[in-house]
Image (cartoon, helix red, strand yellow):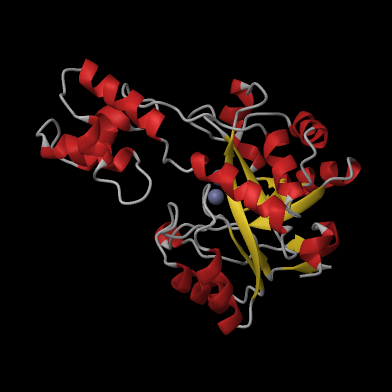
Length: 292
Ligand SMILES: [Zn+2]
Ligand SMILES: [Zn+2]
């Protein structure tokens, strides 16, 4: 049976989406989504709000998160080009879902593990400040750290650079110095799929590799790697994939006894995007999700 009632991948202002949790819940309900998972990047900060917003609208809510993991297989330039990907991947994204009441002890461990993944690490910040100083911009660590109410991140450093007159705007600070791949950025360490999956499983959750077409890896090789890493599913039904591609990944997943998931990866209404409207074969979803 096909269904368009599931949307298991989307973002709010808790990460890089432009809608609040409530606004997104409205959009889900307007588009007839009845099983919804919120999957902000590396944070579960939206879960409590989303649980309430969903129940007010009669939607089943599945707590989720999109984990930034390491690139685990080499990409093929030809495949990237065929998929119209401009740049090689800098990370792989693993969706984690907790359809059942999570296992308390496991969830605590998972949350502790997750928090340093969110850009809040002081040692990384100190390293970035060293780099900024080495480029002749005198910024004091205390100045940056004291700007952060909770966890310190690149925006605090960017603000200090604006105030000191080294750049005109925060955008300029990111574009010239602090953004990914820019000279003063220090990459955060990323977990492997196997490590992330083990932690999610210990908390009673399941995992699915997000948007498989972004990685420049042949799908069969990719699926074999997911099986070896104990990942439960693959997002065969992602917005970016054509019908033909969805079908191909779904068939391969079946062959390897891997489940599939579905997601709009909705961030904002720009470019005519909307949540939902993603048909999926219900029997191929992870059981914990199809029964939600
Ligand atoms: Zn992603
Ligand atoms: Zn996403």
